[in-house]
Length: 348
Image 1 (cartoon, rainbow, N blue to C red):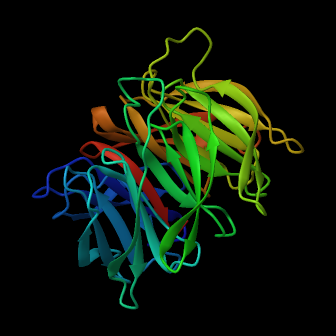
Image 2 (image 1 turned 30 degrees about the vertical axis):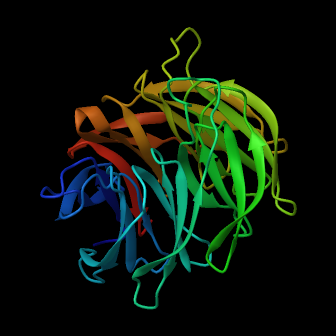
């Protein structure tokens, strides 16, 4: 491994007896990618999280009987060794993250409508510590017949735990107290929006959410003291004239805080927005094809690259990020990976 290479893990929709988590390398000079290692024994490893020391990796198994897996990361090879696995007591866990203090792992179960907290033991293994069942519905009778938590994560200070619940049209705030998720507050989105993923601006002043069902992006002012969000702006996640597809997926802000990207699976593209430096408001700039089908998750690398996971064309495609404009240019390289749905950069 040299200074011009960045490693990343890719989570996939594969069977338990197939390779499911792929360790890959990105050449920061060219954008070329290659597979370094493979891990099997986990079905549908659709979302991954790694600790700051990068010696522990956690993954959900998005199945009807959901599970969460804990792995030790080999210091030399970055290969994975299973530590333990725990049931989520629900169905289709689709998101996992670590608390800011790295004492707990947080999981969202889409189908069964509940969220989990797990205590991280000294050896990296997981032990259940909290579970909350969301209840309710919203206006879309087909997709919002019940609660559907789609992501769970903490604010930059680790004071609050937020859940985007697609089924309730809510961003639900909790306090994590001794491993228990204690209800704090809920912020409503527009009826039928379907909040899915979320990212904070590096300043901590603003936050951005992508809504799957109405294909929109929300700009929020974040109150870190009270744990609240105030919607400042709503924009389309699709280019003008595009048909709504209820398929907007992922959202990320660049580390410099100047650019925001949002993926949508109906148009197979990623949109670029410029962030106003004093207001946090967005201006739509362009949409770029991901050169594949059904871009789900994508990731930004500090070396000036964006990698998109094209689930239904079995490819990860790399793009250069123009440091002045944020515009994306395909490198010409793609990596064949079965049904990739999550990209997790390490050693950035």
